[in-house]
Image 1 (cartoon, rainbow, N blue to C red):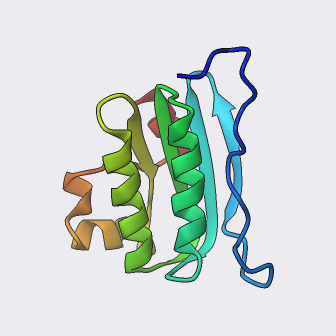
Image 2 (cartoon, one colour):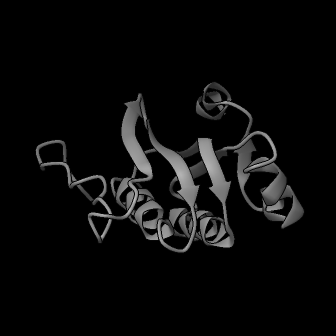
Length: 130
């Protein structure tokens, strides 16, 4: 467990290949929650960035980690796998929440049945308030 005196680990690395698109826009702290803002296209090429950023956020053991997909424009199965992986890593010690609305993200999560496993919210504000 990290004490308050320990330096914070890096939140997320960029893409493995500098020519790959960057899909993690940033990580913000909101009280006891960390919000990982994800943008653009989540596919087999970019999903490892999402896995890394969510894993880094979870490793800090905040009370809540929110994956904000509100600016995602394409969402492939690799993105779903990244969310399920983060949910499993969170276990019972960290609440893992997802912001998804619309056909690009929410519809995909609904069609695959993942909304039964993940806590999905329409807005970042809703996810932060739980």
